[in-house]
Image (cartoon, rainbow over all chains, first blue to last red; front, side):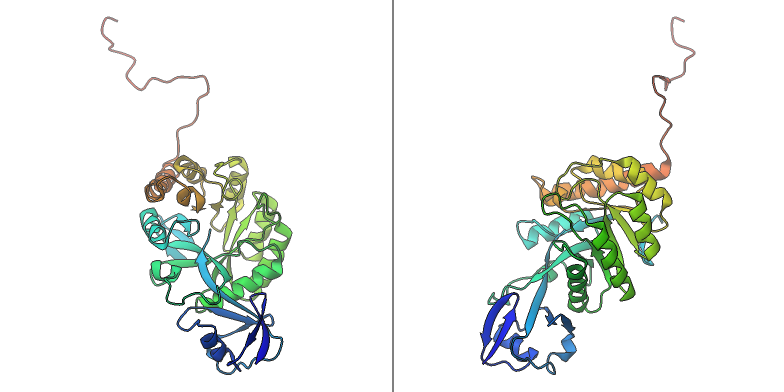
Length: 67
Length: 260
């Protein structure tokens, strides 16, 4: 179990040790997202290699309609 | 061909449209198609955790292969938030670096904070972004943003979403006359005549969202805007007749009138 802040909300994740697993646990598989971890962009190619640590702050974003 | 060139890329349409405030993605798609726009703005927002990932997304309705996406920083009030948002956008859109920078100063008027805007533009340009910048219609700030390396200057015509039209064509004219990069009116257009006026003044393009999405019939308005931008551009290129105040000039021959 790991405590993280995701999109401003404190969460406990059970099955994730890296970003790729986090995507699966959050049911975001197949969705086009971009992720910032502790203020730094995590490139998609690095999802597997980017380990989560306790109290990481993540932002997970998508493109939506806007002007 | 009379094309719009932004950062070396050629576009045949001078109308840029936003993708917000539509009833659904289908209406978004139909309105964008009717507008003839090739560049569409999108916002970057936190994903809804737990939402069904199979739900259709904006990217399905408007394939990035067909449209040039212009991620914006709408809703950002600091240079830092704007820069972070666009770094995320670049990652999201596979390295796409043409962006719309907008840093707001006040939630009521949505007026731009030009000081934060300049700060953000500085960082973004250093990081290789091609920055199209939303700003006030202050010619000094516009010039400063151009000198820094912004690829398009986008002054407001009136407040975002207000539909008040072109309130200060004289300032726009000053900005247009001094700029080497495209000047694109962004915000404030309410109806087709507003878009035509912006183009007649000499703007390189017009960016709008609410004027189309907020119309009673958005798709019909999108097509009206498409025509208005083209009409306004042609009128600008044609060069209007001089205004003759208090002096009429007949269009028909003054001689040969019967009974004379």
